[in-house]
Image 1 (cartoon, rainbow, N blue to C red):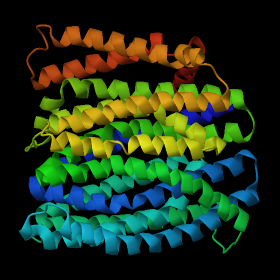
Image 2 (cartoon, helix red, strand yellow; image 1 turned 90 degrees about the horizontal axis):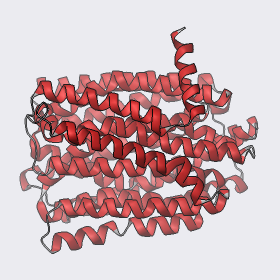
Image 3 (spheres, rainbow, N blue to C red; image 1 turned 90 degrees about the vertical axis):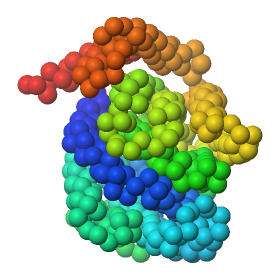
Length: 506
């Protein structure tokens, strides 16, 4: 019950942050697209994607750092937490050097010889690339501090810093409008400056608040080996995730040019705005998932796993359904320029995220156990099939949406593999998963989509006007909450939610 209250409180902080930042984020995305134009916007998404390719190293170490910090906290080992932090900082510094070398050699060669960029914008693209590298370095160096904040569950600070960040992003957007300098280069430079500011804020807070975050040089071969071993296998998964996203973006660019990258950029921004609600929810849950396993309380861990998976899906479903059913109108209002394929890309990316919302907690459960070798080999292999599949589809002349349809199909296959893999570790039956998770998810989804389909095709909502879309979205959210409350959660969960809300009102 104490853990549930902590999770609920942290979730409340994170959702307060999301309500305040979402509107600003959507507005800034619109202004950036209109100010840069479709071509430069596509270049920014494409060039930034090259640097993201190197983030598999960063992603694997982030996963390792958070896992080991939470594991030591689950054992209540203060010295162990401090040692994990200090050694993580050492390793991240080395990673920074490696990534810069790779980015300035292989990445630079790929940018100037393989990508389809208009000749008159190649010079600007190279400048943007350099700023993207610097931005990414600042992000890497911030990760040990970010991991500590999440591990200690200081979500109030996490929420406030996010609000500060989004306000600074808004200032950057206004700077783009009022300065005559090359807007693509200016946007990249200001984004880098923002990443430095956020790194300094995180560093100062952690050093002041947590004694374990006061860096001192440490050398522990066993811990370094464990960190690198865990992150080494985790790297397979990170490569596959980055490859299936940025690799597909580059294949689309090779066949169709930078305008298709603008469409992918819009789809990813809409999805990021929606998925941030799920990410914030999981940030509140993830530390407890690792700590319950580290403390040996497997039943509590298993219960939390099912709850996190189910609630992650429902939270995204509530927001995603009105967007899925009104995508074209929403994009036309949000953007003055709607790139070709942006509508269908947005819908398919959201559907894929619904699948990933269900699957994500199972990866965190595997991470908590530390048994990730076989898991990462199989998952990475399946995910990387997206690349040859995308190439074949486009080579055969199929429409680009088939690339994302293939990705959705692979996502479904991966979800059931994750269930089977975690089932062997935690010793639960598939019948248990079906009863406590899948049946409730399917029941709510079918009831909701069936009801909204009838409403959408009724006389009132057939015409896409601002009033109809707003009313339909409100009705959709209300129905989603009602269906989830009565058909998607257990009686015990309903009682807890009611008690929590009443306590907050009091």
